Image 1 (tube, rainbow, N blue to C red):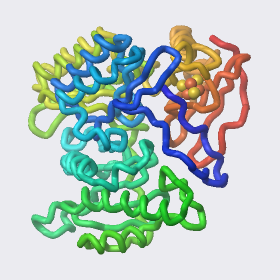
Image 2 (image 1 turned 90 degrees about the vertical axis):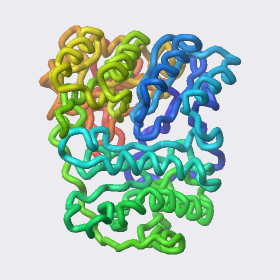
Image 3 (image 1 turned 180 degrees about the vertical axis):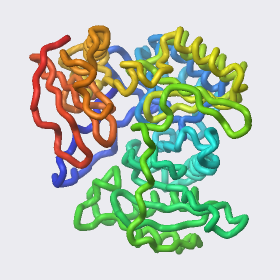
Length: 447
Ligand code: SF4
């Protein structure tokens, strides 16, 4: 995983950006210690079985035979040799994974993975995500967005609304309050502004793009070169009122909501926990997780085969480094889940691998102080999720993330347990939302 910015302490000045971001993409490869890395954006984590097979071909023919899942529901291929860019691009383009070369790094869209699958919510946000992606790829202005800018589309359950989107859409649960046949309503927010704009559901994708364009205009006017909404100068943030004015010019009607309600959080830290999800139509979906976010080619191909043979021919990648296989016959779901478990995937919420993450570490990242993934695996084998401590040492079932240096690439949002290599062991600390980087409150030797 290429380095990401270190955690910025609360209250610290936003950075001044005097260059474009260096986020890797499918066309802009990142040179890592284990070869080149490509990051393939998958808006809403959506993949057809055919596209999944194309990624398997790329990983097997060009990469190191593994696929890494990111905290934005994207896929990374590692170990790519120099000079493979044209062949990789052709493979992805033929599979429909590169609809616009100029926009490939800005297609950062998260959407509630279980929307429409579990009797709780309709699938509106999935449809909005696809429409937003098409609008993004057709927008000349949007190609100037940073590869870090993030759209988040929550179906109202609160699973992705807290993942730090620059532009967030939250479908409103009380659809009955919306005019009949109107397609519901959504609340649109920018950055951390507590205010929101209520918009008609059919306008939601266009409004999200409009908010991103308003950000680009604001960033240019402020002159800070901000890549993200939260990086704008604190005294000149992008506000919902500013976005409303922009949307008004494009013919989108909005209602200003002074204090937008925060969606109720799901009971689990995420709602696509491993297991079987019963659907509304006699079908079931399977939710599995990749151990430490990495899949072997064989695991990926098994998932693809289950999706193609028994499901809807589709996979949904989640921001929790998981995969949802929608639409299996309810009668075959348990057997299919067992087969995935036997292949080494996480299918049980009580697994010690559940909510355990790690950055790339050595040997893939030259910055790493140690091989964190091997250390994390050794800790699990020894019955621990943090170095040298029993599982009960992790408070409230919080996610645990191991990092090879202070950058903490790919760490979870919200509250989490930080396990950071120091060169002399690991330091362990609980991170709460909106807090400064964790204090060095515990040091443990390598497992
Ligand atoms: S060691 Fe880990 S956290 Fe540090 S830069 Fe590398 S991948 Fe990121």
